[in-house]
Length: 96
Image (spheres, helix red, strand yellow):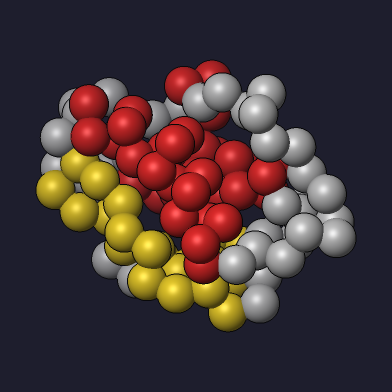
């Protein structure tokens, strides 16, 4: 099982703008377009649980659940991609 890394995502279509609020719909769109396909290629996935301000609560599923690289994936790939899309203040909360 390989770790999902930030270079696996295309950040060209969305850039950080501190005025953009991370709505659940917008977060789900980033997950669906940039994160989930790479995780699914390794037998896992990610679910959006809720968005509470700048805290984005997610749950890793499938092969990602319990994977030794899960923390790396959440911080260095998922959180970084969401920060690129919305704001550096975005924080991932693992609900796995």
